[in-house]
Image 1: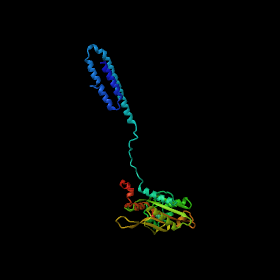
Image 2: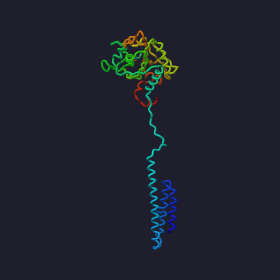
Image 3: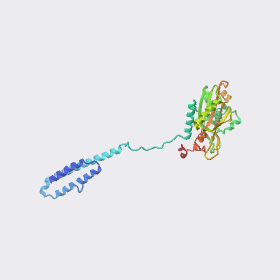
Image 4: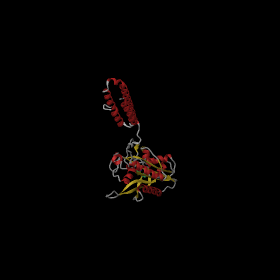
Length: 329
Ligand code: PHE
């Protein structure tokens, strides 16, 4: 009997060393400590011993078994600890969860592109208020009170003297009042018009104003700057034309059209900007000597420019915030 107990112990010693995972730990338990395990068998044998031999082996068998049980219990605990620790640890090898990435609105992208072209041509960027006085929006730009020219733009009046600016041209005035020539700047921003909303017009849109004032600025320079912009923006093959026009604050004035050829439809000219030589009256209004200085100005509609470039046929799409539209750009 004694031999058998010693053998059981030494094989337990051997096998507990081989335990590497929960499965082999469980096999160890079944083999030695289970209901039909080795120790259970030894206890059966012990029961069958003659009475006088029992005291000799009883204690030894009990001690050996409880010793093995203790070592097994410790191993279970250490496995549990290890498992908990690995749960708390951050697994750096796991693939990351991707967040959907937004993009810039197509108008912002268009504005950025327009700005970067003019910045390369030597223009700085300025801004002015959207709530504008009648004084800056009209008067200083040579729109006399009650002059029919004011009817060109359907104005949102906030009070008798304040309007939501109908164009970015008042920023020209603010700039010329605050700085002396030479001046070369673009002025992007929102403008508002009280027009019937349709695929072609909206109550709100964006313009980029341009102004260059110096000695001997000519219409030829205006033309070459705008042509350079148009070709950089639309590509060398773009079809454009300058058409004479009228604005109270420029003389002479022109508009630029781009040829628009939708697939399978008839092509037509679409206006993208107004421009001209700054009217001497406007220069005098801001205290610039119109004998010494001349200047040119232009104002372009950003939505129109983007619609032509990307083939967008309804201006309202820019303002609807429909994801199906936005994710296309
Ligand atoms: N402000 C004019 C408009 O909104 C555009 C323009 C700007 C024309 C500058 C000439 C010079 O229609």
